[in-house]
Image (cartoon, one colour):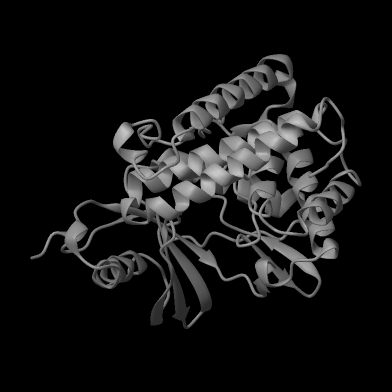
Amino acid sequence: MKPFENLTPRGQTRRLRRLALEALRHYDITVRDVRLLSRAYNTIFRVETDRGRFVLRINRPHERNRAEILSELAWIEALRRETSVPVPTPFPTRHGTFVVEATAPGVPEPRLCVLFAWLPGRLLAKHLSTRTFTQLGETMAHLHRHAATWTPPPAFTLRRMDSPFPFNDPIVLFEPHHLEEAPPHAETLFRRAHALVQATISRLWQTESDAIRVLHGDLHPWNVKVWRKQLLIFDFDDAMWGHPAQDIAITFFYIFDRDDFTHLAHAFRTGYERLLPWPFHDERDMWSLLMGRTLDLLNFVLYHEPASHATYLLRSVKRLERAFACLEAAPNRNHLEV
């Protein structure tokens, strides 16, 4: 059998679909259809059953353990019970558990899987406007307000966003062979950004430690659905401990390249401040933390997707240059400018 890593994406998906079917045997459902939704990070299948539509998430191997996934689900369940924010409902196996370990021939390691009830609606990415981004800001504030007072259950464990690279990947960003197709100043730019980001994170964690709480960690327009004028939040897979400013900077990263960035950012802040004070006391921190997301995703691409790294490398250089320009133009002012 051909090694999994040597297969085409389609070939890998076929094998993972077999693993999905194996995982679904643990649930009290009759499966009628299983179709791939995405393989951007985890592998996500849409599942049609006699009990309705579901989403099966197959986690990447070696990224999160069972305790971390159960911790994610504990917060989702608390949000479902204690707030008005629509979130996905995890579906239990016939034995009452929520995380299934499944295997399949030709897939080299077991995968942890979770089944969620389907969320209706269309992706927020197709409905971007100042109105929906005001809603998104208010929704994030609901999450932050809940997390600020929520007491996690025993054995709760999540990563900590206390460095620019909070995931398990080795840091390859500064290795010379990854920089061969980058502009000559790229390494200096990356190291300068890295030092700034680490200093910002360390200061926030030390001087505002009482603000540290559980964050969604990836609240962008492709992890939100719009349904009957409501925003439905999903994909809590990157949930981790952090400062609220870090969560906002991640969201802003995904709109930074848009011409209407300023309008959307202001709309987001307007919604957020309906519930909570804006967590940035210095606007420069926002640009710094946005650089952090840039470095983190670039490192991910360089390590996991080397075939596409050249284009992404150049795009990241331009993002960092622009973020530095914004930072230098905004000395200690608590408002957004680009």
